[in-house]
Length: 227
Length: 227
DNA sequence: CGGTAAGTGTTACTTGAGGTAACGGTTACT
DNA sequence: AGTAACCGTTACCTCAAGTAACACTTACCG
Image (cartoon, rainbow over all chains, first blue to last red):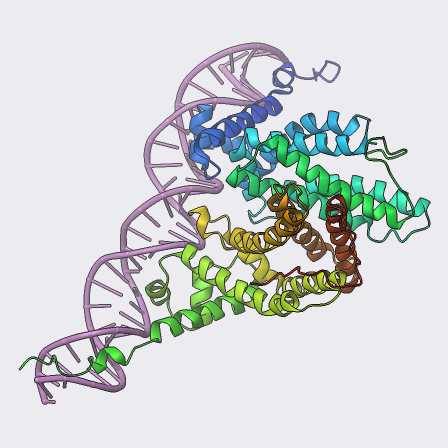
C-alpha cells in the first residue's frame, strides 16, 4: 500500500539543517586558515583545515567564488555584530560617529587577513551583484544617504548630493582604514578620533549650508542610522 | 690587435632603447585589449593583440604581475597628465578642488576597464610595495597631508591628523568614483560639484577649528599641491 | 664571407590551482 | 534488503600562466 498518509521520510528529516550547519563549519574553517596563512589560501588549504578532501568541499560550494561569497556574508555578520550597537546607540553626534568608526576599525584590525581575503574576493570573476564588499558599502551608504537626504529636504535644500556624499563618507573610513592597516603609525583610538573629526566637519558643513547649526556635543534629532 | 680604441659594438648599439620601446608597445597593446575585452584578459589575449606569441611577451615581462605593474605605471602617467594641470593651477580653492576631482573622474570614465584592470592588479600576489594603486593614492595623500600639516602647524594646531585626513579625502573621491562608475545615475559635472562641496566643507571645518576662516571663492595662500 | 649580437619566430610542453568522475562506505529509516 | 543522504578516497581533467628548445633575421665585425 502506498505510504501517502505517513509523515515525511525520516531518512530525509534526519539531515534537516545539516547542510546549512556543515556549510557554516566550512566557512569558519576558511576564516581560521585565512587568519593563519593569509588571504591567498587555496581550496586545498581550506579542505585541509576542515579535515576533509576537496570533493567534500565542492559538495557544499558551487565553486571558489561561492566560498568567497559565503565568507563575505559571514564577515558582514561579524562586522554588523560590532557596528550594530554603535549604529543603534544615541548620544552626541560626534561621539556616535567616533564609536561607529572605531567599531569598524576594530573589526579589520582583529583579522586583517580576513579583511583582505574578502576584499580580494570582490575581484573574482562573477556578477557584480554578488560582490559582498560593494554590497556592504552600499548598505551603509544608503542608510547614510537616507538620513542626509531627509535633513536636506527638511530645509528645502537640494538632496541630490546625499547619495554621493554618503559614498564619499564610506570611502573616507575605508581608505584611511586600509592605509592604517598597512602602516599602523598611530593607535586605533587616535585614528577614530581624527576620522570622526573630519567626518563631523564634513557633515557640519553640509548642515550649515542648509541653515542648521548643530552642536557636536548633542544628539542630532531626528537623525537615526538604523531602521 | 684588441679593438679597445674603437667605439662600442654597433651590433649592440643597434638595439639601444629597443627593449624599452618594445615594452611600451606591449603596454599599449594591453591597454587596447583591456578596453575592448574587459579587465579579465589573459596573457594570450595580450600577445594576440600585439601580434606576437606568448614567449615574446615573456621576454619583456617577468610574469603577469610585471605586466600589471607596467600597465599601472602607464595608467598613473595618464592620470597625472590629466590631473597635473588641475593640481598646478591656482584660483579659488573650491573651484580648484572641483577641477582636480573632475580630472580624476574623467580619466576613470574614459576607460573604466583599464581602471578595473589596474585595481584588480593590486591583488595579484606580490609585495605590497609594488601596488601601483596604493602607491598613487599614497602620492596624492602625501601631497595633501603636507599641505594640511603645514597649515595646522602654522596655527599651532595638532597636525597628527594630516595624514589620515589626507587618506580619508582620497578615499572619498575613489569610493564615490567607484559607485558612480557602476551606477552613473548623475553626470560627471554634478558628481564633481557634490564631491567638491563635501571636500570643501571637510577642509573648511578643519581650518575653522584652527582659527582660519577661508573664503571658498578665493585662493588659499600659500596652499600648494605641487612641488 | 663566416662569425656574432640581439633581436625575432614557432610548437610543444610543464606546472599548479580549480574543479570533477567514479567508486565504495556509514548510518538510520522503511 | 533496499533506500536516502550523507561520508570517504584517488585519479583525473581543464585551463591559464609560464617555459624549453629549436630555427630564423638583420645588421655589424674582422
